[in-house]
Length: 325
Image (cartoon, rainbow, N blue to C red):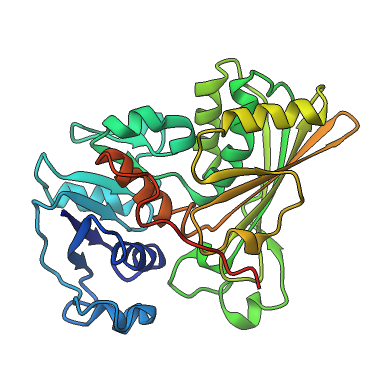
């Protein structure tokens, strides 16, 4: 059995990791680290886990686990690893943005591979450490990778994407308060969102002459989880050609699926899937992309990466079904 440690155990991504790992046939939860909750049962914080396990949060760390998942806030993973040294045999999967960019991928002699299986699977299989992609970045890249691979990103790209309240993390804030979020909608970090950097680097890795602008408008939606992204750009080919490109690129992808029918968010919430739909209007191609921000956008993709690193079936522990009604 693969021994697992989780650091930052009280947040949404850790809760999702635990929920998935307790049903994973090849792993054993060794510890879930949370200094603020040490000694409390995990189900007292993640209440959906009542009856699923009797493990308690701990302030003690096993430095010899097989896999360490870091579920810390952005900037905190580097600080944690500076204070805590793990065995050279411990594989690290970081869910923050600390190691996603090329300039940050080497830390304390450890190289972090960008963990988007649809573009980087061969490197992930050989990796010792993974920088798990951001949630918006995952949905947007999966909408654009086939075009980048074909060298067809030759105009500015317009992106409008909406995320649920869990995208802001578990700590309450002014824009996650129910009275503010309910029956509400807002834009934030327009044109400047932090995920733009990793998106750009991935596109350049497939289309090395890519230098077009990404105009990204992130929105807050009045729902709990999920991301729905609408992306449009110039495309000279037919809709049939566009579908051919996407279906060929994702022919071996186990979690990314191309739909000929319009898609809606409930189709992917509570799953590790990404659904894509294409529409042509005059000289423009519209791509809609949807994921669950906590699963394919975070914890599910982290387990997908772990499965690849250990030579397991990529879908192990991730055979999840959406609740469409």
